[in-house]
Length: 113
Image (cartoon, rainbow, N blue to C red):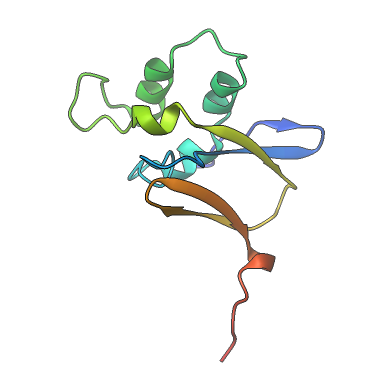
């Protein structure tokens, strides 16, 4: 399944939670790509959505907000920021103690055997 992305001025929006506590996408087991890139979530965090965060996550995950398996960390949601990347850039989101950072393939200093 391809995750619908939010684009503006030729850039793709990526959601990260740089503060310590809980990771936004890195702690959303089974929904990491959706939490990082989904258009509906980006619209929410940009203030362009009338839906609640819980209802958007319910739609994306198919899990009720009342369930113990609901993949939403309130501490991470409070700190989510939108970062912008060029389309096609390969990246990963790394997390340390809940603090997330974006690393592009060019920044990873990979070795080749």
